[in-house]
Amino acid sequence: MISDLELYSHWKFRMDSTPLRFLGNPGEAFASVTWTTILRQIILGSVLFALSYFSYRKLIGKQIKNLQKTNWSASLLFLALTALSFIQMRGGLSIVPINISAAYHSKNMFTNHATINLFWNVGQSLIEQKNIKNDYLFFKNKDAEKIVAKMCQKNDSTTNIFTTEKPNIVFIILESFTAKVIKPLGGLDSITPNFNALAKEGILFRNCFANGDRSDKGIAALLSGFPALPNVSVMQYPGKTQKLPFFSKELKQLGYHTSFYYGGNPDFANIKSYLLTAGFETLISSADFEKKENTAKWGVHDHIVFEKLFQDIASSKQPFFKVFFTLSSHDPFDIPKPHHFTNRGDDSKYLSSVYYADKALGTFIAKAKKTNWWKNTIIILVADHGSLRPGNSGHFAEESFRIPLLICGGAINKKDTVFTNYISQTDLAYSLLLQLHEKCDSFKYSKDIFTQNTPSFSFYAFNNGFGFFTDSSKVIWDHISKSYITKSGSGAEKDSEKGKAFIQVVFENFLEQ
Image 1 (cartoon, rainbow, N blue to C red):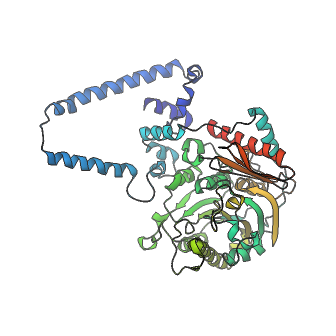
Image 2: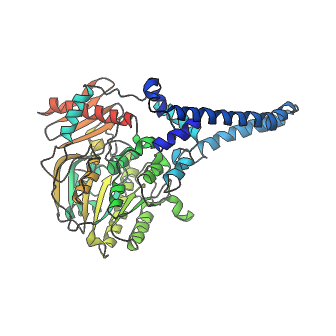
Image 3: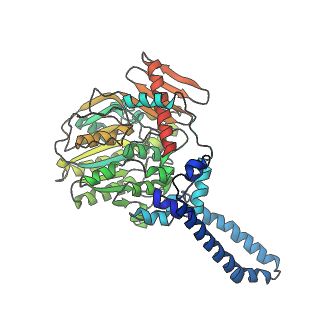
């Protein structure tokens, strides 16, 4: 606890397992600590120990000596209370167990940090950090960094797609949407009729890939430009997320009001702590809706949240940045009845949930087009991650990570346009900042998706491996077997090295944060 007080003044996040990583080199660890600090900590620690010891002796020690033997019924009662305490430790019986997000409640990060249980935080971090190391070491770090730096070179200019200097920006992050259900991307017909129609009104990206296979990884990629990694998520480490760049913070500096909408519990996957760290001024969740509206397994159905979003925009000061993360197409695909598809076997529920979300999206867009703010607004439709459904694609497969990305709205100057360059979720925030004439080199793993002369590649990570695709090759690496699942195309040999260098550098960056 004493160490935490001192470390917080330097790092601005509560103590976790990070300091322990430096104890292997005690000389370097203590090089930045003055003797005055050490002496102050020793004195403060001694005083607290003495106060605790004498308080215990006086208030508790005597009571323990006078304890009387009790009967077996009291013992059973205390045993039952002990069992109940484990439910409290979990945070109740809800779907989402307690995590650090439960302590986050304020826009003031110091207030959030003050409510974190230090010992829980250190213990949880030790468990999570125990087996984390960079096994993806293929080159000398300097050589890998040179390869990645060339891949992610920044542009001085871009192809302008906005009709106004500061358009309103609405992100709609579509839960588990995959290119397999989007007809213009080669997917099934009649699953997303509203998305399909909108594709003719904006810019559709044919080769956009999710960086990871979970929502927390997708959100960090979209809003911070940080690539997903196998078996670990940066969002689970608040100390690390504080060092990420944030699209929302950049927009806030440009005068945008920022809001995030999610019909579920934002404590899930540490989303709330990430969003508050990202500086979102307004966070709407299931707790902001009436009990009668919280009827879905995960919280509030999408069409209700879409209506809330629409009403809020009507009274919002422009320019605004609003993000809506849908949930109805998340397993178990709990949506209002009747289900649209009933004859598609095991995929019926998933396809019905996607159809429902698309219908709610279509209703929102239809109403938005009749408003005054539409002509000054861009709408970005993108998935948080792909899906193994429909069908039963492999967890590593290309089709499991290919996702829709569509940019439309009244403030876009291109219609019915398809870009075929290979891109990832990590490229989006940086590219939009370039459209706003903002250079933001802190998004170091991002490239401009609107300029055709930038490197064309997509990267994604799955458990124990990664995929790396370009215009001339497809590479999928399995790190357990140390072999390629796929290695095809004229540029496969060279591009496989790029993929390996990329994951090595990102993993090293993750560990260093």
